[in-house]
Image 1 (cartoon, rainbow, N blue to C red):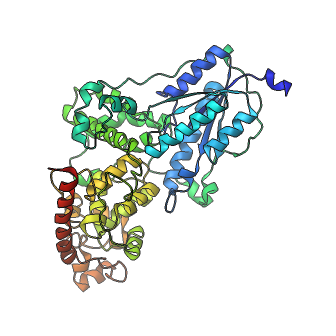
Image 2: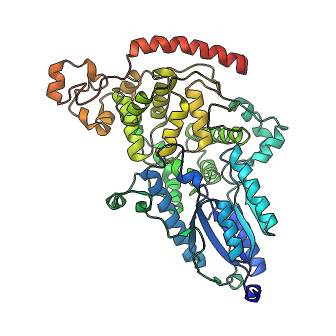
Length: 504
């Protein structure tokens, strides 16, 4: 017991799954500043907690795991180069793991990015803070996953959380300009205590591999469309605006872009403040483009704001901002969606792209959401949200829930209800069927004039294309005419419900 008195104070920084970076990491900076003053020992941890390991449905796809693992390895490399400290990975309940760390080491402080992913998540943060206080451990948390501090928004709004983007925008003059990104604090080398011990602690695991999560060894040989990590994220950011402003006006080209910053923001390899700062530097080059990008950031800000103060925001039942629509229970239809066999090529191609690459253009996502919910299938938006949670690299609960509720007419009502016919929007975005044929090779020989409606192609055309509808590719899961009329009637009822809830 006496030997414990000789140990240096340990300063633990908990890298959470939405803050896997060194730059613009205020809570890490605070930890390093304390070390400079106290001659302490830095311990960096990452925890694979149950909320990530066991989502509501199938669990994260290989693309999600690959991106996370790449980000962790890059972070570990940077920590070793800068501080000769590894990123120590644990698996389990964070409260149990931190408790074990407190028992094994002389912990003086814990720092981490405050959670902003939902009402329940910041309640859990409060529990962690109380646990630290009980253990006589100082705790430092900072909000850095959004442009604005949610507490500041709450104060400026006088305790009335904005439930529409319009009301949120009205707060912007009072919120002022977002804080600038903060550079990484330098550590005074002679203040940096050596690592006291390297014994494996309870719940500690090796740096994860894809095989640890049930994937085949051969699958680890392939690279995803997006490569994880802070360094790659910063490289993407530096060229993002230029590549977007020079993009072709050909809509089909936008369907397969590989320069999205969404995955890097979701895992915190980039901060939104870094993106905002970059956009401000380029505002004179293309004001229209920059204005659109800033609006997207503010829409994200609104989503996080409303989710932060709304219990059960990711569900329909118990969500005070979600209209309780009588969705159909259709396990067979849901199965068709997950296997990309709805019989509508534009929709099925989008599903395959989401599953194979973990990304899709926002028009493609909107098409899928409307088709799945109030457009044709009348399946709950929660099912769609859970699908995105499993497969999309840029999935962020607040943003995804706002989009799914709005597209399904379950909440966040806009002035008009947009119609997206899965055939007409497909023809507009992909007139030659190149996108469809890439993700649905069964239709690769189908003539362009039939590729969006292969069930209407003459039998001889189907034979020549080597794709018999009903055998090689499914017939449509619903009749568009019949279902369209039914959905029109339902939409009218939805609009009346929305008016009753939100007013004119």
